[in-house]
Image: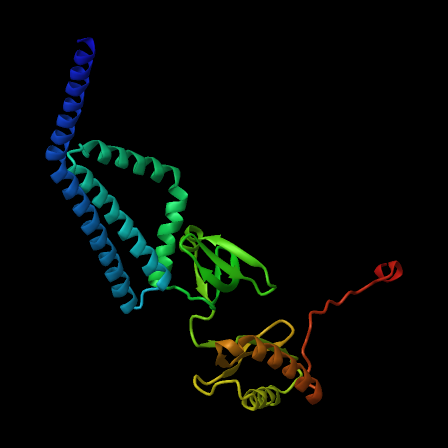
Length: 285
């Protein structure tokens, strides 16, 4: 009799468990199916929207790095919304989730204030393109060739082969000089001759040297003119235009050729001199 009571009790317990399972399935099965559908469809839509955004940005010639990054940002933002929607489909109160996400976002934003500033600056650099990879620029107190532009940093390679990593925030808040920004550039030289030298002859020498160099452009026309009657010299300005990539080669070559040509013609290039007059004590008396 006692064994029969135990059996009946176990049977009742099993029946309660089965009833609970049936209740759970009948109550939540549709919600679970709905949540799964929301998750799967939402994830697919998020991926498609992110891919479409990347395609649109690339067609509008937006930098590949920026378009890829923005595509990932949009995808993960939509993915979080899909998860919240799926949780809501299960009957979970998502208000607390949104509160937690908002608080976490604020805390992360404050903790990563400088990093977010560099990120925003990186987006601006990639979108507005004040310079591109390969340009020679001066920014943040550094001059170098742009090696890469990342979301957080700009990497320059200096002319003596040093790699300089500059936070993007410093780049956008300082003056940017893009030395390779234009295809042509003017060379500015000042050449002085002595007051006893012939101005016409010196000018003729300069014009001959300018015309002989095929790298110097005829348009805009070069300028050769007397600019100043200085204390010890008559100064000429020599301003030829060249392609930007030829700037330094032409400048160095032209400076050397002018000195050699002036020496050959006997035209002096004055240098600062100081006369010192010495008197003896007897002369003073």
